[in-house]
Length: 172
Image (cartoon, rainbow, N blue to C red; front, side, top):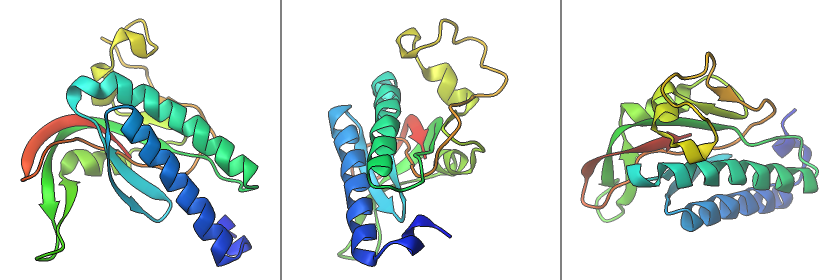
C-alpha cells in the first residue's frame, strides 16, 4: 500500500506541499526554474550554463527531500532522472490560462530513464564539469545510475516566453 493510502488526506497534502516547497527553493537557489508540479513529482529546468549548479542543487534536493520524508515517517525517497537536450519552452494551455512549460523528446527521455536514486543519461553526464564530482567526463560510467534508494522527482531544459527552442539539463 502506498504511503498516501496510509495517512489522512490532510497529512498527505501537507507532506506533498512541503516537498513542493523544497523543490521550488532548490530551483530558485540554483538559477533553475520550477516549471510545474504533478502528483509526487515536478519538473525543473536549468539553462546550459547552469548545469553544474543544477546538478549540485539536485543532489542537495535529494538529501533534503529524503530527510523530509524520514522526519514525516514516510518510507519513500527522491528519485532524480537527468538528461541534456533541446526542448520547446513557453506558454502552453487553454486560451487565457496558458502556463510556462517545456515539451520535447529531451523531457520524455528524462522521464523514461531507468533507475533509482540519481540517474544521468550519457548526454547529461558529459555536460557536467569537473567540479561536479568526476575526474573524467570523456568516458561515461558503464551505468550512469548513482545511489540506490529513492522515489519522487523531475526536471528539464529552460528558456523564456514566448516559446523558444532551448538546451539544458533535463532532470525528471
